[in-house]
Image 1 (cartoon, rainbow, N blue to C red):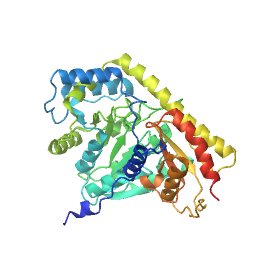
Image 2 (cartoon, helix red, strand yellow):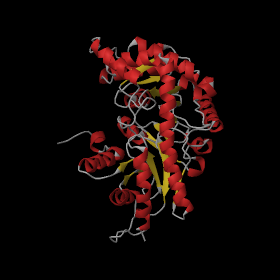
Image 3 (cartoon, rainbow, N blue to C red):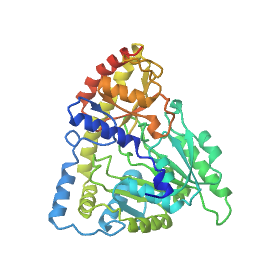
Image 4 (cartoon, one colour):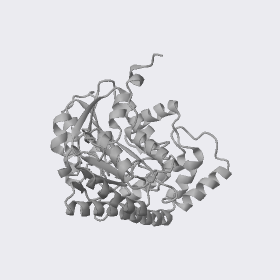
Length: 418
């Protein structure tokens, strides 16, 4: 059977592949601490009780028909009020687009802005931009970042690639690293975009920023979240924000995301998703609209939720630091945001007990699953080299106790290498 060139050359998600394989092993009785998928175990991280009650009431009230293609008005109004109150970003409800999570919104941004062959600049590691480039026919320009800068792109790394580009795709807090932009770094990148747009001729397509801030409520300690338009208001016509409830309320399966940005771009995204039919279920939209207006409930949930996530991240971080102090070739970056820890396991080239030389992080991933009962995602799944010794640990799907139990198994698995 013949299929399109795009479909024929499409690569599936390595993250989902690893996660599914691990889940199948767990179903068969394997004891594995699964730190792969950026999801939540509802038995550990249930959605807010008030949101659950609102969803139930919305179904009982008969909200089971089609919602408006751009989202119900009450949710778009609630989202803009919430964004104004917590981030100081003022947008009209007409400039908000609701969809079934953030994925369709990112895809719609690409389709609304990108012509085949257009350049899209994004850092690696990063989540799924390579696949969205493939789906839209964009020319990907991947910027290799460094642990010295917490894997966040710097203005110096971005600057040489903006000429002629249509889109700069950024995310903070960043999936997969759990790190964030500093104010100074993001300001410098914003200034580059402003300067690039000023250089372009009238009528020439401008350079836009896709700013994925789906994890913005999940920052820890003294870490602060920054965004382009607050830092540089003149970028307002060039920034599309991606947001929603999936991560900050452990509501990945509720499927309510929203984007906001320039009227012209959002209108085109509405038209695209109107044909695709990627809207969030109406009952969930009604429930989310009510919940976002319940300030005390939101504040209480997020405070407890963040503290629990941070405990797990810090337990993993401290466990790796203890191994490092004992001379093991491991390290980690201090968790700053999201639900991820960046871990370094620098053991490629070593030999397993059965005589296999670990030549790639994919092989190391399989070894750790089998020998340590620990499942991680290598940064190669996010665009980096398959020999880069960096991994994502996602804490939403495992208990703190299971992570603490996995650390001695990791030590034993490292001891078995020679």
